[in-house]
Length: 483
Image 1 (spheres, rainbow, N blue to C red):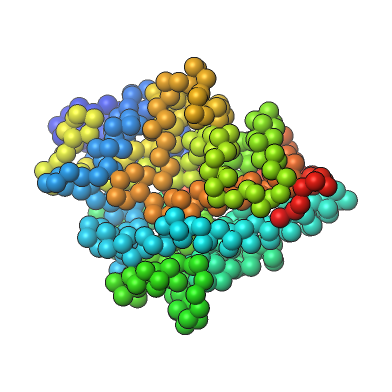
Image 2 (image 1 turned 60 degrees about the horizontal axis):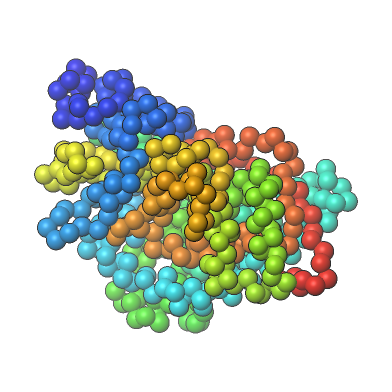
């Protein structure tokens, strides 16, 4: 401990001595789900860089995006993903999210066509079909809610319905068929288990941080978690094989990589692992963003009124398409502000300093140091944003008020930057906008409990979301056709 505090190469970096001594304090906070609060408080006290553990640094300065995650110049070494955060690989070979170097570049090349602008235009009708199903299901719930608000079938927990919608959309795109969660309005055992898996992520991370335990991680994991991971992977394998056997052209991921001719550049293990990655990342994060914007706008009715006015200027729902939504300034400002206040991936994506070390914000970081840009903390500090705890979409308007003119808007990168930035960013943003616009075009939305402290949640790499019960009033307007 004396060495870690007074002789370690990171000894000059600011932070509490207790955290410099051992990985136990920060690991304890992560297992409790409260690390975000602690890390944010430490940055407010110590500044843009904080030492969280003997060999771990956290940043909230925009330069860290470029220095750690940005594209490398010729001769510069890449900051590789920290394997302790990535966790064990079920497929025996990594998919697009865990792969490194040339393998990752190759996998991105295989799937680029499936996430191109053309692909997104082709996928728009598929997404809209699920939006129509969402409306149909919510209309029935809203009618029941009006007759008997206390009835179980009148309960509308938007966390659940956003999960239903995103899983159906991603199931359609990944496996060539929806999971029918919206139609049945309940989780399948596989999806329920997958969502309940969130807490185990912190446990796997904690085990992997101890070298003596990391090698035997799979043996140390509880049997229930191991079974959940195996079931998830096996389910994905079965669905992928079923999709390949269909031989049907449709705007899903498999058809699009076949159309591009890149299916020959990926083996089955890589395909299984990557489709499994897509199914997890493309559902949980989008549903989180939708839940966040729903709560924040319900909490700020004056902002909701302004947004509703912008959206309902369109009298026919079909007018609200990919192009239209990209050009609605207040909608996009609300989306950005929701992603700032409640980022779907609130923790930092951990990287390891390359061989020979490197420089971040002008200071040397020794080889092997774990480094992260703490997104939630970066977005909740005055260092980057004025009034960081306020929901102020106007800060992201093309011509923001003077109060927010100095905000570091380039800091907001919920999908990451550089060569490892999320390949599905455009798809995720369109689904995010389209699904939320579908809700507020058809319904007036309010919280069942106006005093709900919904944002007070644990974080185990991802948010452990609380229920979000809302009241929906059907918008009746004869000039406007339903979707």
